Structure formats: C-alpha cells, structure tokens
Image (cartoon, rainbow, N blue to C red; front, top):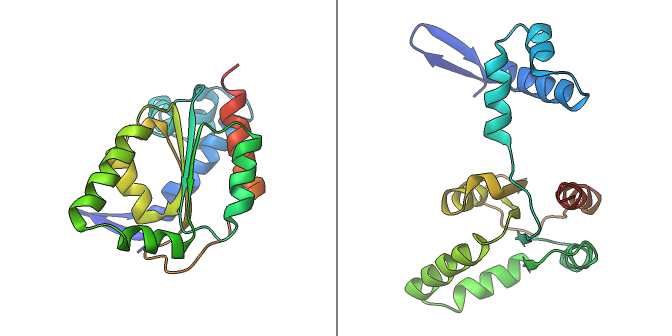
Length: 178
C-alpha cells in the first residue's frame, strides 16, 4: 500500500522514500544539512533526525549473521578476508535442521543467548528476511544493526547474497574505524 490515510491527509510513502533517498544522496555528496533542506524544501531538523534514525554505530568488532544463504561459502570466505569477528551463516536446510534439533524452550534459549552474545559487537550485519531483521533489531541495539534484506518473509529457499555489495558494507564498517 503506497498511500496511508492519517486523519484528513493522504500520505504517499513513495514520495517520503524519494525525499529521504534524495536527502541522503545529497548529504553523501557533501552538502550541508542546511543546503539539503533548502534544496528539498524541508526543515533542516528533519535532515538531522533522519540521519540520527539511520545512523549505525561502527567500531572494531563486527558480527555477520545470515540465513537462508545460497552462496554460504563465498559469504564466509569474504567475512574471513575482511576480518569479521563472528560469523554465523546457514543455508535453508541448515537453518531448518538447527530449529528441528531443539525443543521449543531450547530453541528460544539458544536464540536469546545468541542475541546476548552479538550485543557485544559494535556492528551486526544481518542477512535475512524483512521480518527476521525487524525481530533482531528489537532484540539488539538498533544502532548497531546493519540490515541487508534478502526478501520478504517467509523465505523458504536459499537466497544468493550480493557478495560485492556485502564487501562494500564490510569495507565501510572497517574504514569507519580509522
């Protein structure tokens, strides 16, 4: 649904996305918040708040979690090359076998323990469905999560990860450390 009714207003989600994308592109080009707000006809504080909402805290420790990943070996190899500190990548079959191997309580305990473990990282790259990413963002510090959506839930097949795109994310996280 592209439009949302809020009281008497009809709001276009596409228009909002376009303005946000334009604002971030202009900021990435080096324009100030004031210049962007003037160019787009919005308040400067909106630009500042958008940046705050989307800001990902980066640092020295990076975790990578992904499922269901078709090119698991390539993703793991890239993670090793780029110095990712914690990697947990599964195919759909591995994910299902993992879930089936545990009772409901044990599975929940395992997921909560994993969330507690990855909360210690400065950045957590998540390769998953839209729903799984929202769930993990609620369990983790949202500012540490770097979401890469593999598709809409439910994902019932392995998904090919764009390794070049993932490499850019990892390089950006690592270059932010300096």
